[in-house]
Image (cartoon, rainbow over all chains, first blue to last red; front, side, top):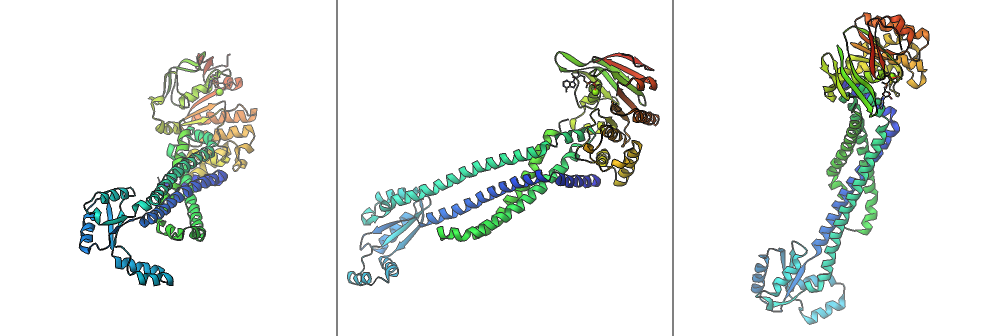
Length: 301
Length: 226
Ligand SMILES: Nc1ncnc2c1ncn2[C@@H]1O[C@H](COP(=O)(O)OP(=O)(O)OP(=O)(O)O)[C@@H](O)[C@H]1O
Ligand SMILES: [Mg+2]
């Protein structure tokens, strides 16, 4: 037992030495696959957080008529929060609305002056966030048909409808495109990997057949190749991890300019262990599995 | 020990490489198989080593139908048989030493055992100086001697020698034949396929003569008659 493990290691090292170029090609394609899979994963994470950010910014406001009592407003709020579509309701009194306005425009002296003259023109409002994008329409309809519709001055959903719809069209578009891209690229790289490894092992056909004929067992022949595949996969994993880390590090400032809220490198950091695992499994898995498939073909005799 | 039972092998539909072959070889026999080129000698060996499967009939080794052995267990049969392949079948990327050592590694021999046995067979076939050369760096006759060395090194029960002297000069030919006889004296079953008339006539051992895939003679003390 021990001696055959020793032999398998010896032969694997011999293969690695003699098949330098083929091993190099194998490491190269596996590394590309690892990179592709893990960067797709990272891209997915990033777009997810961007989409969340966008969705977080979407809400509708229900403005209530001047002079509606807080009591009424709270009962409306109570009723609305029972609707299954509503995720969060926030009450902004006219006083608070005024403060927010002042905070935002405090440098505009002219505006501030006229505000003093007008008093408080702001309506109290309820800010509503829904669970799903298409819930906003339903909530707007709900308000339209409710008993308290006379208290509602306006619902700004109708003004903002086109913006909201565009945002959701874009985000679902991004998701679909990402999925499509990773499917296409994924199958492409796996195809290339298998082909490269098949070519790399093709020259071994004759040797494997001879080895079978002089009495080597399947595992004695296959073991070294699986080991070679595993080692290549491991190297590919290390290479692709370093490339991805470096790429994230150097691309972070550039992306910051485009999306100020996004830090690529911290996103990489947060998902480091998932990425590590994904790359490790892709690398060694692909290395061992493709060696297994490649040798299986030649072990028929 | 070895038995062919009504074995037929058909490669192409219009001609049989072997047709209804039956014979028995006992343990420690020395048998020569003679026949013209294309008579079916190599095919016979391939069937015994399960490199090919018979179209009809059965091949037994130690009372076991070799074509019923599970593919993953075939190595056990092959380790008992030392085959000198007509086309040598040396591993091109291994040195002479590694080629011969491989069959010992396969059976789990220790490094010392391997070193001792390989050195000894290399000395026997006179290739001590070529230990670290690759097959492509050897002459054809030298390659043939490596193939012979590999077939002997792990002391198999049976040696199948397919034209082992085809590319050797008379000196090395008689050396190899003496070697086979010596191994046979030590208790190994030897089956020798050849079309060398002198060898057969000087051996005076059992000879099976094949013609067009059929056994036409099986003589106790064979002469080369074709
Ligand atoms: N793989 C194959 N496919 C088709 N025909 C084959 C195959 N192997 C052998 N044959 C045919 O079987 C017949 C016997 O071949 P075999 O190699 O057994 O002859 P042989 O007696 O060993 O000849 P030689 O003395 O030249 O080595 C030949 O006619 C050959 O063409
Ligand atoms: Mg032949």
